[in-house]
Image 1 (cartoon, rainbow, N blue to C red):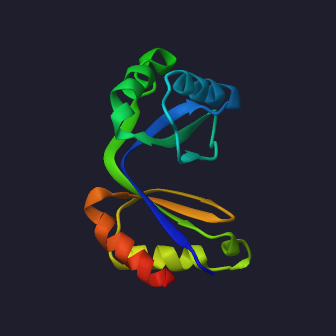
Image 2 (cartoon, rainbow, N blue to C red):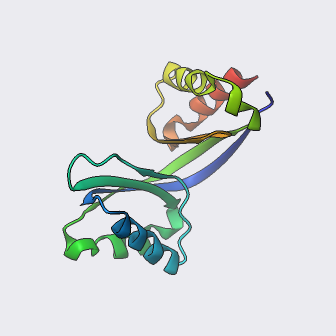
Length: 149
């Protein structure tokens, strides 16, 4: 396994709590964001526990004002966005991870070892992405890099 680590900074996390647990509603949210020419990266939809759920996604810090102008009006202003800007994304990429159990556990253990404030995690067969605070980035990046060497 030869993973590559890609880093992006100036990332804003947007969380919409208590949105309708309806894929049509979620679709409309992302269609309107796309129409505003805002690039969305990490997306996490929480499992519905009732008729409502939570949706988190990341955007570039430069788009924060645009996204707030839209999200503050969702459902006539009843859905309040929670935002956290100035974050960094650390992505570990390797096609070999698909059949290699424990890679995520190793990455998480190293991040935990330096008390990383992880805001969001997304994964696929070949990628693990962690959104971390800018203040925790250096220690987290170094720890993760050491885990994968």
